[in-house]
Image (cartoon, rainbow, N blue to C red; front, side, top):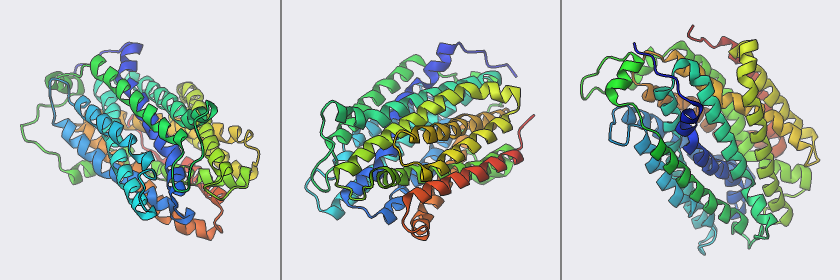
Amino acid sequence: MTKIPNQSFWQLWNISFGFFGVQIAYALQSANISRIFATLGADPHNLSYFWILPPLMGIVVQPIIGVLSDKTWTRFGRRIPYLFVGAAIAVLVMCLLPNAGSFGLTVSAAMIFGLISLMFLDTSINIAMQPFKMLVGDMVNEEQKTKAYSIQSFLCNAGSVIGFIFPFLFTWIGISNTSADGVVPDSVIYSFYLGAAILILCVIYTVVKVKEYPPSLYNEYHGIKEEPKGDSPNVFKLLIDAPKAFWTVGLVQFFCWAAFMYMWTYTNGAIADNCWGATDTSSPEYQAAGNWVGILFAVQAIGSVAWAALLPWLAAKTNRKFAYSISLVLGGIGFISTMFVTNQFLLFISFLLIGCAWAAMLALPFTILTNALEGYGHIGSYLGLFNGTICIPQIVAALVGGGLLSIVGGSQVSMLVIAGILLLVGSLCVFIIKEKK
């Protein structure tokens, strides 16, 4: 098997640069969906149900993209056509979603419009996002994968910072952060517009700069025999033949992604209540808290960038499992601490710790898995199926979220404590991961 040649830093950078724009779109969605639907009139006990759509679309779309792109070859490549089409659709929907309350619709009609827009937005983001992970698996050798995924993690978190702070910045320069009942503030609407513009420009950059390996060279680099035309992988056979790392990392993923689902769903209400004493979604205090949540998520992303830079060193000094586990422990402590912090600035410490867990979740699972898949065919299909370990826990968490919120007496900050406990459980499960030696 011919070894994939080493890539320069800028070649690795170009492979993932479009991910920066995709992540801005994802950050705007993550930080503002609960705020948008609460503004439209959603009950807090029902908020988690709105969050079922994103992972549900992911679990449907990403395996399909993996299977189709494994069998695709055009003059533009095999993965790149999908990421470009996904980004183009996302741009259109980003201009529609925040306007759900601006078209003079009834509350129920605005909710339905918002849900349909959210479904298309998350579908398109998933179409655009997954090929970037596949490109690293396709074009980077085993020795450079940790570096490549670290660059991707950096761009991901840098994009998150930009997306998270947009509403705060627009408010700071004088764009209105309040509006009529049921209407999303202009500060949020304009944030989605700007995010859409950056997304398409970043994706165009990657499309122009990256040239994928043609099928024959790809097969040679990955030690894959030429497959007969029309060969279509059987999903069940792929799962049966999957390396142990697929399943053991997947168990850790379950607890991690369930935890972050509760962060995205309940942070807005938790911070508004805990720090501002605000529960009225139309009040200036609640909308100010919504902007501050963007700042906190940006702090989390900054913490993630810093921790991602330390992860390769920590993994080399100890081992990959210890680095993974300690990252999740720090994140768990960060979540639990939010219950005891009522000062908006002290929350920076909590979210810096949460960023440590996020950094590990972005880099280490895919490093472990793609190394274990070396020599396997259908890498795109496997990565698409592995997305189930991200989507299924979010769906489960969303389905039980309303019930859990009732059990804890409607306290949204208690849901963040539950998120912390889930991360601590995940940190223990790390040690059963079976890595390919």
